[in-house]
Length: 98
Length: 210
Image 1 (tube, each protein chain N blue to C red):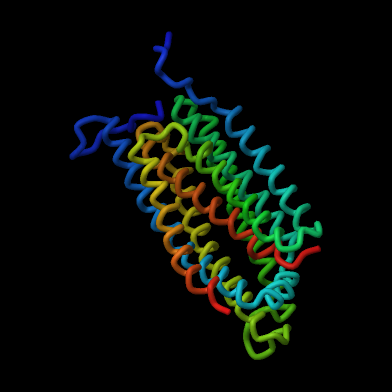
Image 2 (tube, rainbow over the protein chains, first blue to last red; image 1 turned 30 degrees about the vertical axis):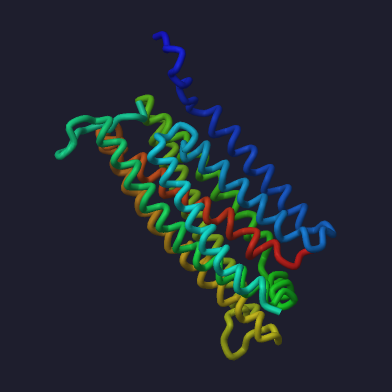
């Protein structure tokens, strides 16, 4: 069966998920390691940042957001947007207190 | 393939439309779940900002081994279910069914490990009640959030396990291809539960280490 130039490659059954899983486990190990390093004030953002990276990997690869329709991707982005609003607005209060 | 539903149901005129609607609807639900947990995460970050030292002291009391093991279990369960879903989309129902049962087993493993961890936590008096182990009142905030966030997540895991059992029965009855929408919906839900845990893990298990 030949594909047109604009059609995406068909999904792999094993390779894609396996690669994502290996990366996720590696990130888990890295995160635990980083937690024990003297990173000072950077430690929290780094640890949570790795968690966010894992979440993005799951969302884009395993939940197939990379291949989803624009409507679905916009919906997923709405979660990030509204969470951002909530954290920003709470942050303008709590982060500004003396 | 994974772009169309198996069996067509009214009011949909096409299998592709039905699948698109299911995916869109599921994502709206998943967004609402992210906002639900997001509120708890906000409470966590505000309290951590206001009581950094107490959170660090309290965070050291969580069992990192249990937390890391459960994270690995859940990540592996996402692998098995992702393979199952992709296999089902290709018509490979044998591999799909195997993946579903493996995911179910890993979900039950998560629940078992969580139960053992809870038992250990209660033994160490980490329930923020009258005989709470830590002196700082703000440590109670950390553990209040710990029990609520992991408890709510555990409820989601339990629902996911029930959905996986349903999928397993659908597979046993050789209806996996007809009900491919169920495969996709369950897969999306399970991955979201995994996403929430990957964000919970650094917040609850990597605080105050080193």
